[in-house]
Length: 193
Image (cartoon, rainbow, N blue to C red; front, side, top):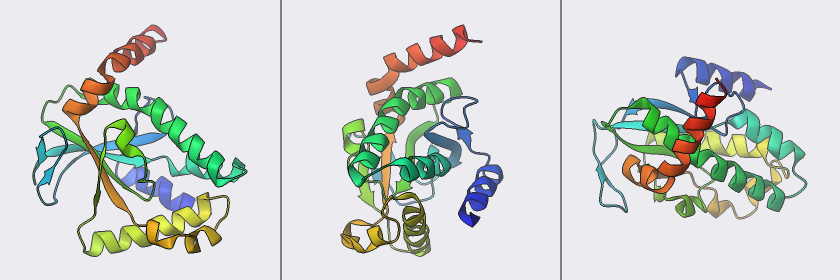
C-alpha cells in the first residue's frame, strides 16, 4: 500500500527510533525535536515553551495496520491499543532516561487516538488552527480508514470525535509515573545483551 511506503520514508527521513530499542514492532517511535508551538501548560505545572526540546512521539502505523486487520471489532481494536500503550510507557520512560538529556521537557504527539491517554498521564488538547492541524486531520483520517476494521465507514460514524489532538506529558511526570518500571526495562535489556 502507498501509505506504508510513505510511513517507511517518513521514519527514514525523520530518523525515528523505536521506544523499545532495536524492535521494529515497538508500539511507539520517537525523535528528539524542538517544540515550535504556543506555550503549553501541563497538568503537573510544567510549561512547554517554543524552543524547548521534546521527544516527539509517533505510533507504529504498520503495527496498527496489522492489529486493525486482525481485530474483529472496534472493541477488540481499542483493547489492543490500550495494551500497547500500557506496555510502552515503561519503555518510553526508559528511552527518556537513556537519553540522559535533562533539556528534554516533554513527550508529545498528535493523534486521532485521543480518548484515554489521560489515564497514562498525558494531557489532551486541541491543535491550534492552521496548516498543520488541517493536514494532520486529513492524513490521520486516511490512516484510520486503512487501519480500522470498519474501514472508510468508520469515518462517517461519530465523525465529530475524529479530530486530531495533541497529547503531551512532561518528562518529569513520565519518570515519576514510570521511572521504577523504566529501571526494570533497562535492567532486563542489559541482561539480555
